[in-house]
Image (cartoon, rainbow, N blue to C red; front, side, top):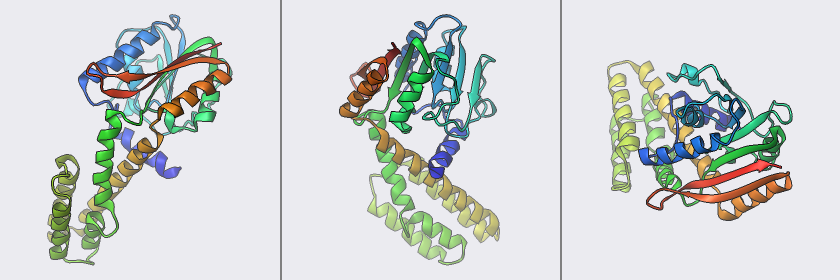
Amino acid sequence: MKDKHSAWSQYWSANKNSCIGSHEEQKLVDRLWQSWLATIASGGKVLDLATGNGAVIHSMLAAGTSHTFTAVDYADIKPNMNQLSFPENVEFTANIDIALLPFSDESFDGISSQFGFEYADISKASAELVRVLKKEGRFQLIVHHQTSEILKANITRLDEIAWLIEEQGVIDSAIAYVHGSISQTSLEKIGQEYLSQHHGKLTKTISGNVFESINQAVLDYYSDNKTRATQSIKLLQARLQGEFSRLTQLADVAMSKDAVDKLVTRFENLGAKADATELKTADELTLGWHLTGSRK
């Protein structure tokens, strides 16, 4: 659990906003949130679950609103310190498990979540959502889909990171080098073997950047700045391990139709109306699952 917390805290601290890839996809999602918010009474209280750096709230604020927002996340989020700015009617709280919300019953007029709800214990989180939602209050969730374009792209990234951090692979060898356990010649040989083995499958943004970082560490080590070389490789390793953890979680929580149908049934058993549809782009690519509902 600590690894999951660290991975997401690291991710959000890097000023990430959303996993949505294109401008057109973002406009689609913005419209969904703005249309949904229009169904919540003016001045109503909205709770955003697994908020990250507040992407959902940012979408809703863009249309202008008199609502007040409470945004929570399990990670150690600090949006207002990460070069992001939100008005006074938005309150962020970090280190909150959405399966155990610190709010009274029937506290909110609306509850939202985008690519976050599914990471929690869904049975408990759905019960908590219904508990803190006012009667006739509304909720809207966008969750990961097992065959979405987002998942496909990130599985490719996951594979490449796994190759880099595998035992006695590129990263292990870079650590061994800065500790003086292997020679530069051995490190270069391992790097060449990696490039040859995965030829045509590597990206500049992942393997390319990793090799640049290792090259800089080698230069630092050669210039007798061994402390900086060691620190930079350890930081690189931590970043890759965090990304590997985050992407592994994404692959694990992406929902099938059966899983989404069970979630809809779960909400109905808890006293809420719910409906789920596939969220698709203009060119019919799957972006996620779109769940809407209200408390009876």
